[in-house]
Length: 118
Image (cartoon, rainbow, N blue to C red; front, side):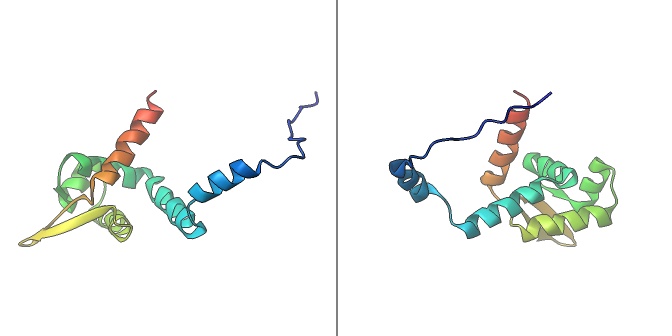
């Protein structure tokens, strides 16, 4: 069986559309940064950590118990999230508590879950 693949046979260039969309395109640098952001979100462990932190500020020990992981593994993922400015931390005595960096991170998580649950 031969599969028919649709192709565009047009020869006319729609310059007005190209100009309109071109003006709205982010820079190549920003697109690269965006793809790196989504790569960080693509790890299920990091997504679980962010989801937990969306609901409550937590320390490494609590996250480790919640996610059934070692403290070392959680700490490693938190470092990645901190370096990407997705998670922030604050020290209280000997304890360090983590939370989402801002509401944008929360919005990304909520929109993603909403999309997949449709």
